[in-house]
Image (cartoon, rainbow, N blue to C red; front, top):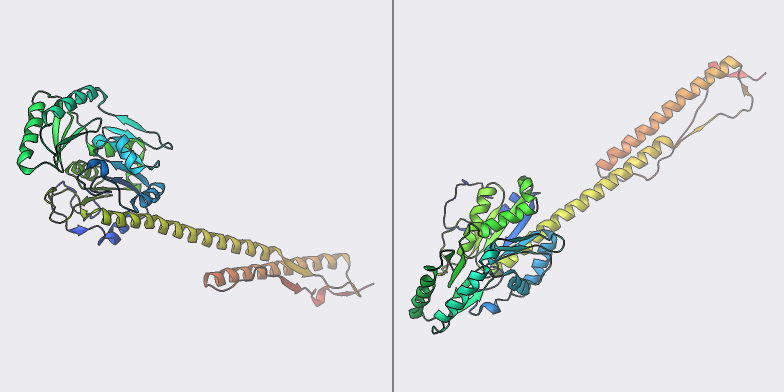
Length: 387
């Protein structure tokens, strides 16, 4: 997307680290408004053996808070919205839980979407059945994510993983309304509905009215899971010129194939943290540039004000009345002469003002007040001895 490569969807192995090529991403962003989408497990937090202990590393919540107050920020995860909120605990973030089947916005933007409410009873029944079916397999566990069931086998002995798979497959044969998806050491049962993380991302953009200004936004999606590929594809299709997809994957990670629809890669949550910090700095740069522009505009306005004062503040001194007079006709002529000279003096003042502007442009100091004073003398033909 950002790389201006062919926009056709083609899985490949990204070789460009997003940190190494951040300057290019920054150039692509330009004056566009970034919209940030983030997976949670493996992206904001490390992958852990106990799903309930997938806490973010030190500093991640702080940068997320700054990010979410700067840009529209959403977390798109397989976990339920309730669980992901307990991990993140930030109120300015949009949460898309259960792989996007449930979406909620902050108080300031209370959007809401629930795609599969009618499947909840079936998922509860499936949970009870599978808990009994895998109860004898050490390390196997089921996580209820409201609109998806996650059957974890990370802690199962390698020779027992097939038993977990068989139990899940046997149940799905009796439940055609559910489908199987694969994650990192997890089998996921979801409603058989045309909806995924990519659908959720596009729904959020639409709900916020951001799809109506595609040329003004720059969506970024960071994720590590195979389920994030749906979001990579959706953004590539909808924003072929603006945006970037970033796969989070350690080199040699056997749980995640290297082939992806993302353009860039980050190795782990540590690099994600640095990348997000740099995104915040982009807005700080914009703010600084805006402040400098405002200061320049204020200085220019001050110069214009001073120019007006120069043009108006011209003091014309009339000649003393002692021994000088005029008849009616000559007096009119003298008045005309004074008017002409006054105009000349005003022109002089304007010329001084223009010079002041030129000096400002050259970086020179311009006095805050310029006062022009010129003594006007009537011509000899207009002078008469007082009667």
